[in-house]
Image 1 (cartoon, one colour):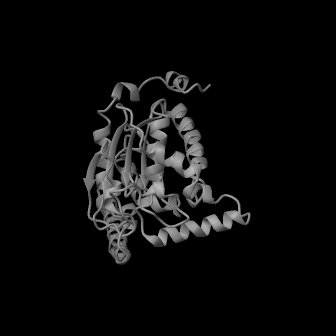
Image 2 (tube, helix red, strand yellow; image 1 turned 90 degrees about the vertical axis):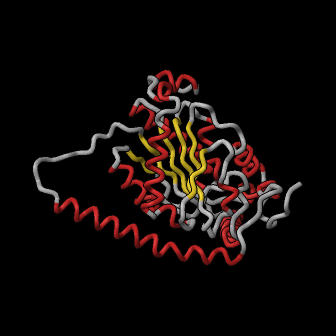
Amino acid sequence: MFYVTDPTMGAFLLPAGFRRPAAVAMLREGHVVGEAGRSVVHSLSERRARRNRPYVAPDPVTRTNDPVLLIPGFFAGDYTLRTVAATLRGEGFRTYRAQILANVGCTLTAAAILESRLEQIVERREQRVQLVGHSLGGMLARGIAVRRPDLVSGIVTMGSPMMAPAAHHRALTAGAAVLAGLSRVGVPGLMSADCLGGSCARQSFEESRLPVPDDVAFTAIYSRRDGIVHWKACIDPQAEAVEVRASHLGMAVDPRVATQVVAALHRHRGVGEAAATAPVAGLLDVAGSA
């Protein structure tokens, strides 16, 4: 049994047991102002600490941790994850952008492009990559991890409704419907109706329910203060669930959430560590790549 959703969304995207956030839940997103302010204060504090530190010699961070690919959410671009990226780099992680200006295209196309990017990173670093995805970005990360565990060692999702992609505020559905309408009249590079309720949407959803390989670590970060996505849809039974106090948009900018991402990535290193450091040639051979 499924709930009936907006006509532009496939009913299968909101399975029984899940629901959308209440209409007034969007008001919680006002917290993003304070969360963004906290990010600014944190950044300024870090700069002051560096200026006041006695100069002895350059002390570059040794980047011995896994490479990390950051994937932005729906309607968002790489710039939205700058706070998370800066925190990760400060902890010794090599971060890579998804090269997404605005995440508004077909999810299957986006996943294929991200896989190609991952192959390049794995070939260069000779080790698998951890993925950090916000909202839709986390759903893309999970699907890629299922298809290409030879490229992925761990995933961290932030406010990603993997269990029920349509468990989001109706305002988001309206935005998706606008994209589908523009696609229908010929605007390229946008989600189509098929991405919202057709075979494309079904394939993406079914992949999000497939088991994550044992050697791919998985952490799902969620918040009960999320005003855009219902928090219960973000808790995958295969993941280690971590609760934070942040709005949906704030997860991308609040330094407290970035700290939880760092902790998760460090935990992941113990999962399948031998596979994560396997020679790149062997990794790519598994996928049949040259």
